[in-house]
Length: 327
Image 1 (cartoon, rainbow, N blue to C red):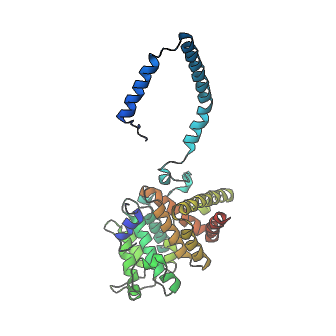
Image 2: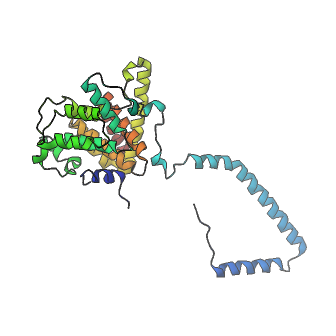
Image 3: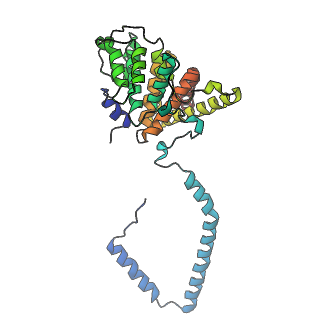
């Protein structure tokens, strides 16, 4: 079995994680031809043969009429049946539920915090240069570098193989995850500022951005500017977004089963919110392992946008799916 896309991605970042025609045997084929020759030259009366032919024609006509009546319904059933490539299709193809921020034309930030959020939003949709994987890895690092034992012993944190003694270097590791040769000077400055301008040992020389982990978890292209919408349009956006995450959660259930969702539900109940989000994103990437990177990137965006808007509603969708399968 080929490794999943998520395992390939995080492995590079230090995470262990038509039908064919049937062929008759020659002997059967020979016997069939032989029986046909016998029937053709059999000494039955001509009148019986004519009756038999007429009956055969009538039977064929009836069969054709039945087929003509049933064909449209059969075709409709076939066309609506799920295909093997269904997992590679965006289940929520609404235009405004797709990334809308043009990262190539970002204007200079009004302040460092807004600039950092815009830069992080662009990382999550940067599939050409692996930005989504790097942003995900940075979020794992920040979430798992905690003294919370429940978080540290979770599967997603233990997969990092990161001793507690390395927590002091988390700022350096997050910087290395986010910054590449193609990172702009502006984004380099913003990330360093947000991390508190760490020295070579990871010790902050300045004041880190207070909500940097939350910004990394929640900032996305789907809600950029959404507060400028009229109230009715905002309600429509949220309704469509959560209808979409409901479908994605159902897809995760079909792929990973109740155990995966139960683990996420338990994390939500314990109020380990960023960890629950990471578990959701990880499950989605594993579900979309055969999909183009743009597809799973959009799915991650939808989960993060829903998480930002109402994490309790997202948690309830997970719980509702588990309860619906137990009834």
